Image 1 (cartoon, rainbow, N blue to C red):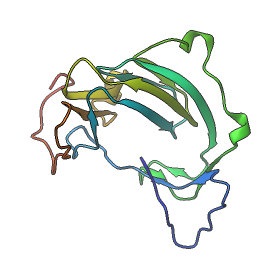
Image 2: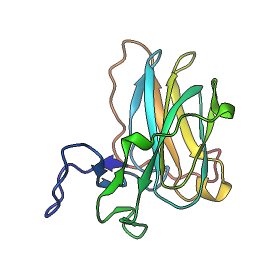
Image 3: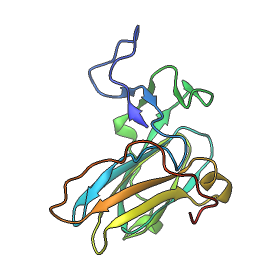
Image 4: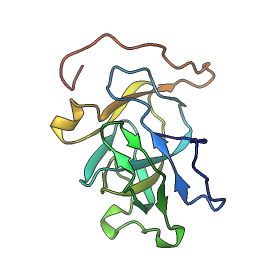
Length: 171
């Protein structure tokens, strides 16, 4: 999802606690969302607007949890794949990583109505990788997305247009 900077008729508070989001991709075959330079550190945030938890697996890199932010998501509408009204959070309610989340991991739980913040380093390989929910039904229903790790010194260009459809989760 990406944050929507301007929504007609909605005034945004200046404290940054209110956001309006839209979904940027629905299937694995949608255009490539982003590329990463090999050897770089990345901070990723996973926002789960649904009421259920998603065990999310990131291929290639191990990450460390930075924390979670609880959100009020009454404005979420699954039919549009985003929010109809702003979602809010209280920065003073940030949830630190649980003891079992300390250290490096490649699978994290993303509870409903929360944003998980993690950081990791992409090194040791380059090419096309993915992140996905470990619920098999979700992998095949749009919660599996590609990313590309580029070798050092390579110009980063996102893929344009859809990929050729493939069967199953192994492509």
